Image 1: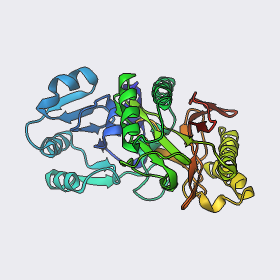
Image 2: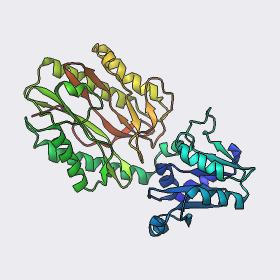
Image 3: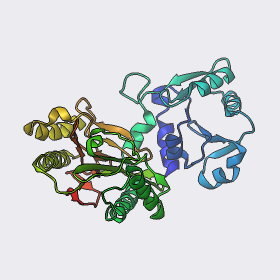
Image 4: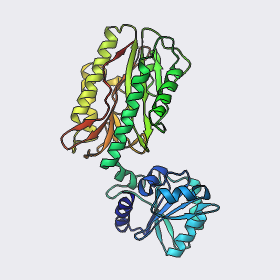
Length: 365
């Protein structure tokens, strides 16, 4: 699989007027080489793929990749510069929004006189910020979708095992820790991001960090969690309520649920991401809650928890079958609380497949 990806990238070098591409960003490096170590660079030319790493990864790299491996003692930039000179490469593409300034400066200092580092945008896009490899990563293979599916299942199973034990007085941080513990026990390597648990008025903070605050009767609780399994992320948000929900809670929850279902219904190959976002906002507007929806409707996920495409009102990406995205509208009311409902879905030609198996009813505890 990785070899086919490298061949596809190598075939695109000429149209970008490049002799080689240097990949330093870990998810892109893994995507193209299979290497999962923390220190590596891939120099990809039309005929060769050379992975540079350090002695800690001598055994690991030999087992993980089919690339030519060069184990380097000392800075990788020195060995990369020497390879560029020996191969007679002139124009070397790099990932401008991914490469650190330190690596860029080190490489630039080691390049042969006539060689240059060239920011590498995707075809048809303007500016250096466009991610060529990220564009390739947006559409998942069948094998990638199965890995995401397993990650989603692990995440949902962890939620179900823990939510039955939630009770008033439990600390937010304890609930988050228990969720992360359970997902690891079920096969996840780690959480895909820091688990969000926030109760009461703090549930109106979209990215609230768990605290020692105790969950109180009469309050909403947002749980946003994801697993990283076999290198692939999952993402899900569900809502709890401790006690008997009142009319405002029920109405707000119904509005967000209807918005989420409308957005899911808008997902299909060929639809713009802006159209999906608009479907959610239209429902919330009918409830007078559209101004309380303060983020995008979703995002892509895979080797990273957040990756293209972004599902926002100004985004014009056309969805393609095989894209894995989240659908997660939310409403946030200061002093009252917030509601967000999120699923991981895969785009199909005529709609989407919802991977998240967890029910979307408000969990009343």
